[in-house]
Image (cartoon, rainbow, N blue to C red):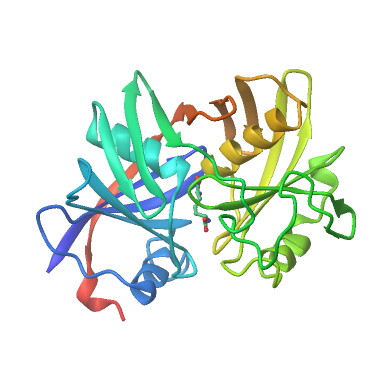
Length: 267
Ligand SMILES: N[C@@H](CCC[C@H](N)C(=O)O)C(=O)O
């Protein structure tokens, strides 16, 4: 049986979204990997299935392109808000987020960030605001969990970082038992420039949770005052946050195309 899908992107970070609210859709890592494959599947950074929720208006399950199911995704939460329209409480593995639509933008309350080393999680105790670790030129990072785990390195020039080489090394370092999303950021005049190596997806044009994590790190280290404009290769997001409060993200989501897919023909 063929089921409909939507292809969308948030600043170039792209998704295949399936609606399983009325029809049971069996999804697993193998199927997600097959659908995400850019040569043989539809192609995307993340595969998303909407389901009925007992806790919120809708449940959103997210798989990275490598087939791993993950807790959260900032860019897809804006796309889903724009797809559904109006205001929605969305259940994710990383907690409940609240999304609304404002013109071409969606605004998402991404929840309160966690800073405890056990919550990132790290393999052993350390100060997550000034981690005494480093990988070559990337030193003294900040770690935060914004629904999913992130590490942020502040550098002079994000373009000078070999993120395609260092990203996978850091993502899979034993310090991170659940692996980690790797952000390199530089402070500009009123904005932060950001590049992200995403856990399970590699280099992406944008990462919404990475933008949230980086804004939280920049505000915590008093490098920026909110709201923070985060400039990614695919475009900009605005992030608001103050100590002890939820993170608020604002930005666009774009419809690309729709089609039908036979899930049973996959592995
Ligand atoms: N692209 C996303 C994040 C997707 C999940 C991430 N790769 C992870 O493994 O946690 C975003 O926009 O936040």
